[in-house]
Image 1 (cartoon, helix red, strand yellow):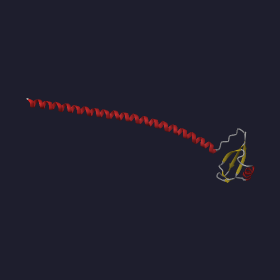
Image 2 (tube, helix red, strand yellow; image 1 turned 180 degrees about the horizontal axis):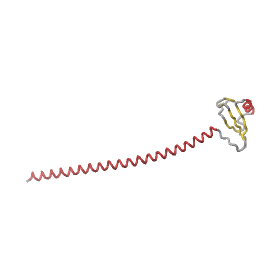
Image 3 (cartoon, one colour; image 1 turned 90 degrees about the vertical axis):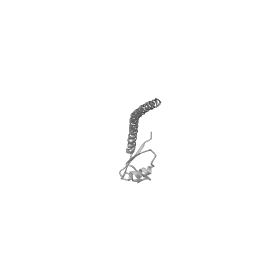
Image 4 (cartoon, helix red, strand yellow; image 1 turned 135 degrees about the vertical axis):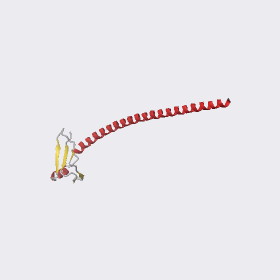
Length: 132
């Protein structure tokens, strides 16, 4: 198993060996030449350490990314739950409104039919009187 190298930078954002460095980063063995590692070791702003086998090599950025990913999953689940609840509430309210409007429509039609029946009876009565 290859070793890993941890570079710790006391002033994150500093540039050394052509790279802008975070507070800490892990690199596979061979990523840096011995000359570059010697330059890091000579700079008091950097600490170079070999990471032992099985040692945690997760950086703060890695951890933060995992947290962000987990939060995103939970947010998406909550959005889906809220959308489903909203859709259900809208469907129920629409059904209630349709039933209300259907009732009003049926009553209006019944009222008009009653008026039509009354008008037809009056017209029939007048026609019958006129024939007499």
